[in-house]
Amino acid sequence: LVSEAVALVVVRLVEPVVLVAITVVTVEAVVELVATMVLVGVSLVLVTLAVTVLPLVVVLVMLVVERLVVAVVLVSEAVALVVVRLVEPVVLVAITVVTVEAVVELVATMVLVGVSLVLVTLAVTVLPLVVVLVMLVVERLVVA
Image (cartoon, rainbow, N blue to C red; front, side):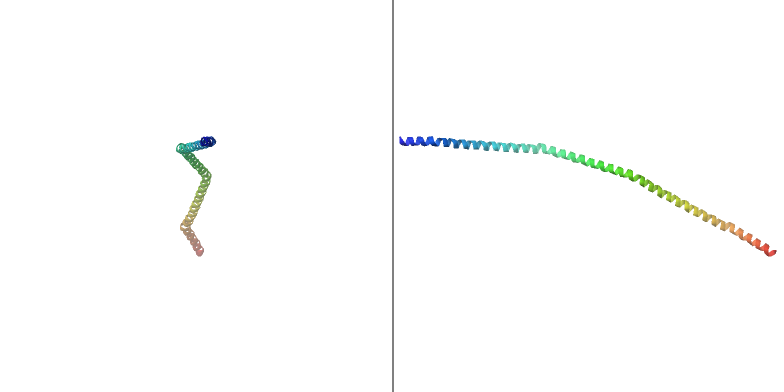
């Protein structure tokens, strides 16, 4: 009887401890299970995002980059157009100046050639006449 009474007392004393231990272990297992489920869920969400949203983000970034490239090209073309519009009058003035200079040189050359031709013509035609006239005057003076 005593041993049964001791066993009963021990069981009554140990039983709450065992129940608390079982509860703690059960709660710990449930917490680990929930934590594992949360981690698996987060992993699934991340994998789903990586598989679905990431390609969309990549496509959107590519579209933005494409738009930026197009904008840069348009801006560079606009700048080139502005530069051409600014430089074009300068080039036209330079071409006009060079053309006028060439025409002036051509006219000056033509005038010089014309004067030279006149002088050569005078030397060939009038000079002999003057020489003949001078010789006639000298002859008349000598005869007189």
